[in-house]
Length: 154
Image (cartoon, rainbow, N blue to C red):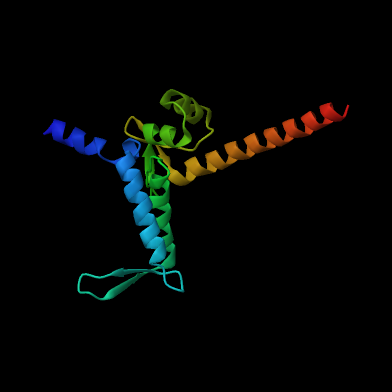
């Protein structure tokens, strides 16, 4: 039973990169869905009783974006914005190690709470930290660019 669950877990694209066949399939599906958008941007698909089902533009766009990411060969994880993440999930989303994330939590850089002895991070708090981190990186790169231009001029 445990072996079967492990196999199912390995089949999920949030745990591995897509295969070449999945990349091709996702590309074809994204193209087909994009061609199925009506003039208002709604995704039109054939319903179970043969009637057309109009999917809201935002949802159709999300489906196409998801398939486009897989078609680009990317690993994809869907996380509801209200979700509480484990340290492993949060570390993966930031592309850092779990021990490094734990240091960030202990320093108070990212808000978190405990469930028993385990730390949990709200998705929104993780994204707020990521936005702050990314802004600092962009500022540093802009400053380096200015310094580089000054050095070239001098």
